[in-house]
Length: 86
Image (cartoon, rainbow, N blue to C red):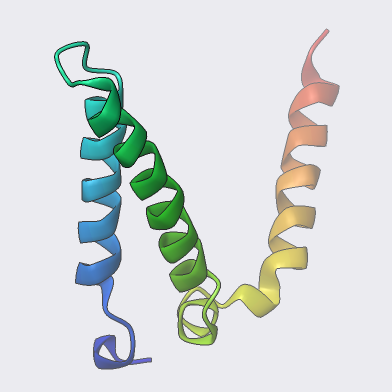
């Protein structure tokens, strides 16, 4: 998969903007009306980011078809480690 079919810059930029919004919502110097607006922006940013992460091109890029195998691998490793504790 080439980068041209998936724009990581847009995803990372949105994540950075989201972090700014989260920090701003907790800033006591910002008025309530603006915080209320930012809470709405946060919901929309989350929806946009999740949509991009669920896109077929992103799933192809991370080879999401192998997710069950990855989960089983993690479970196996976790079970081995927990079995070693005495």
